Length: 497
Image (tube, helix red, strand yellow):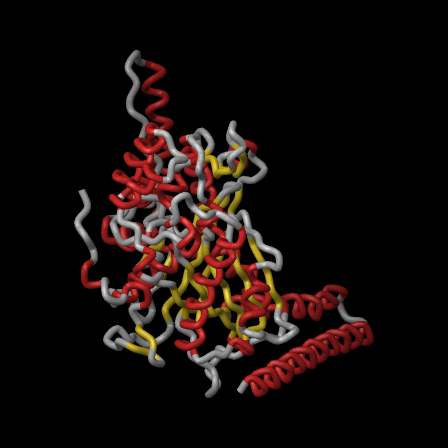
């Protein structure tokens, strides 16, 4: 089957090349015909315009053809479970934290909404923690291989059919790279393209899909795999600087792998190809890296004792708000229906009029009227399901309410953090797995995945479910359809204070 796929890819690439040459020849002949007929000079633009329009049409068609075959999320073995009470006792016993640091982490964890079923890698169960390079490599193996084994099994796509591997892991950069580790383990072909993204934060998953999408557009390949994980072994901070202790409180073990494809490369319905589950509707990326305050809002450095950790800068909440305003403006243009765009424009005009009226009133009297809040688009008209950054219950609530979402729309993010903690970019896929396990994502529904990462950057993926509903199927190709939520989905949602 692999040879058939490769042969089809070469035939399709050759066909696209022939079509491009034929289009160029037709435009040249048209130019010659117009020149020979000595007609109006404006006719010279017709062939060129036709070629430009054809190019734009092909680019748009290529973008809309990118789809998600399926995805998998790791459920770590139960022996790695770390209940909250056990974690707090662990912090006291390992000897690297003073009383004030333990007290600080206790308050953060108890207020975060985290449950008793999250996981730490084996290296952090030791006393003291074995945060070495060798243990980080072992953690990577433990994360990648079971997740990818499940993905290849449930889709029926062999590793040798994968044309590109994109791995995003912010805090750990190995040599050979993490993507090379995967390609070596599965004995992938010599022409496989491997990419390793680091330092991108929780928004890296969207960047990985963007890289895979561009590879599918420009190369004759059938599939690309995007792997998202965070190696917690080296992300651990063993010092006393409270601004660096938050990662110890929130981040836990997890990994996701997504198989993306293009219709021209094997997802379009050939007998040997698995069907596409989701169609990529929109991919939007926004950053404020040129702003120094935004750039320094989150960074990795050493404390006064020379211990490396990740620091959240002052005013990060305000910078995230400014970033989201810019990001949502760009995103809303592409995904909001026209009726909501018109309603939003009308609301903005009314708000501007009220603000101007309040300003005039306050200048003519000693008392000042409260300023009307800026209106927000109703994003529930553009998406039925939402995957949000898993940064703890207070931040999820604040972000969700800022987007105009209710508790139902925030449920997947809240329950994922409660069950698995923050797994960086992989959290967005655990949330989608939660909604699928609940049987909520139906054919025609739209899913919005929003990631926010260091830099600062905000990235969004919008997917449309195109596969038939299979909510009552407990297995597919011998694999559970409940993913990491098997054996526990019936316990959720849980009530939280």
